Image (tube, rainbow, N blue to C red):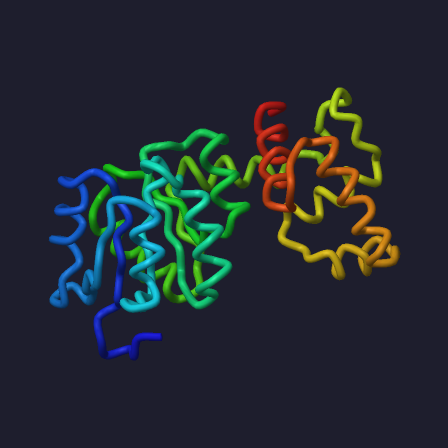
Length: 218
């Protein structure tokens, strides 16, 4: 963690060269930031992170090879201290909810006021979750909506929908078991059935499908 009197260390993952140059120009010590590195693809970024040790990574989602959401998942697994802030042109559910499910700490759209971006970097470094206004509305609408809108064609039982709803809100298996009064092993069994019915392989994939269904049903 960077001391308070030193610039925040930011890494830029962006495949568009002019955009990288623009971001690098914004991130200078006089503004309280420093760009410690950049990459045009996720593989290169993952190789550089251990050496450069940034505080915050700006993540574009549409990348060549490994996409931004997969990068977020990998970075979260190997660098728990990192704050991952999405910076993208995409505000659709197909990009938003998978990125959040993978572990993104914030979600900003490109083209906004540079001051908003810099404030977002500071906010995410401080433990906040900055989001562009339109993104925040989508997330708020999701959590204000009644649960259980996953289509019947997917065959999820009411109990499975309950579990998936809690999983989408960030609860771990043990916490879900405690809240529902079930054994952890029972939750694991239900999750196995959920993964099979949704044609996914893990919790992040299940949450992404669930949230996208919720978004489409609104």
